[in-house]
Length: 468
Image (tube, rainbow, N blue to C red; front, side, top):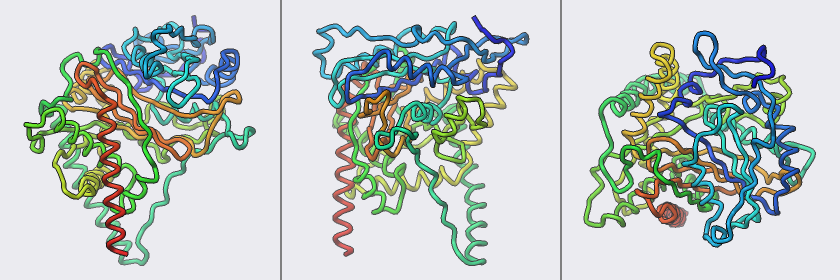
């Protein structure tokens, strides 16, 4: 029951959409630890951090006009911290933590009578951790950027326990020097933005209204969001990605899209060697942060928990519909060059802020149910979702226990596959969450992606040797 009815806040348009039964999305985040997790220590830390945050200490109720609002409530930490009882036979699995998280992916929805989050503690070893915690959060509470930033504000730097870990800052934009060069750059940027906004928003509208992806071995079927899941992850070398990035003068996102496209094409050829997929239509949806910075600094979140920050918490995200090229290339770097062309169009367009604004307008005019139905159709007409969230730059610890890995994912969307890249302390994890009846071997799919990156790195090294 709400304790302070005066402390209320309207639910954002995206939050209202995400609580609709047809689009009930949940964020899962597996956090690996170097040592066994102390249950009392975790509870104490959560009371000092999560329980003070306005979203994590509120429940959703309807106001007099039937609109959802956040209402402050008292957090009973015992209801939010679950110590998992892993049976001995389950511990013999090659991935008991991922299996437990996969079960959470299709578990009953979070109880709306209490704040919509849980922390599950698993004191069982995994491939890179002695113990793990799984954070289960309803997507209406915030997007990946917000939640990673909150997580960082809860932790401390291993090298400097008195201070919060640092998050990446936005890269500096470089502009041409000189009046005429600058004028031409501005003119070209304006014209390119207008053109690419028209073409990319047109693509988004077509996919939403009538253009479905071709049928492939990884395309989901109706009701795929309710199918049992499998979660797999693998470590990706950031240095290899930077080598490829430098070779094509691109970005980390270009490289990710390149090796994921190449990996999926290779996986499809393995599953159906007699079929030619090059002419197949395939799209990925990407959630894009529309804030000016790549994330909220941990200090902002810390201030927010004290009620003194005006940082833009919540679901500040727009959608992109990204074409996935399945053409086979003799030069592995061509996959990244193709991805770079796609990424350039997307970055110059206003597709992400347009979709965010269009969703808010649809919400005002038609309500959350129709908005959720439209978003559901867009996702169902595409094949998979892709995401990249930059994590902290340095190792972190919770209650003195160093964190070894961060593995996030999103479940509940009508797609058979979600691929996520998460960086942390100079390393990166590539994560795949798949409907196991459609993609029974997500670890194999990730290996195809990893092998594609290796081929790209070797091609980049060879190209550098030829030019030196």
